[in-house]
Length: 88
Image (cartoon, rainbow, N blue to C red; front, top):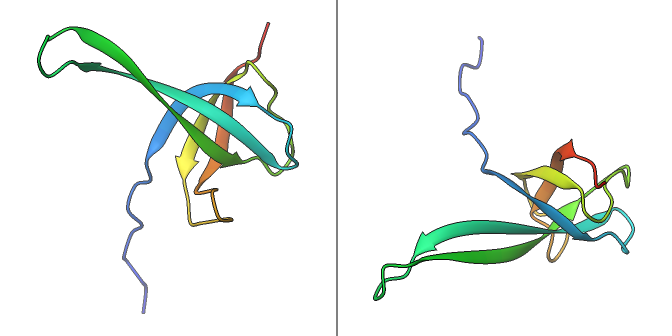
């Protein structure tokens, strides 16, 4: 009997690595643009995510894609999905 249930699509974000000091962990800043509720001006909001980087391949300044995953540790719920652009 073949199991035909499919996994739901995981959330993906793109951001910039701001810290790579920890072993197998990077911190990624993801920016999003939203409209201010009262003044209707476009404002940039950012959030920092702790991301699991198994091979320690990303460095500060790299633009990376991250994907949602099961909890790896207390703060890590995201994993490195790929490096979009290396820091110059």
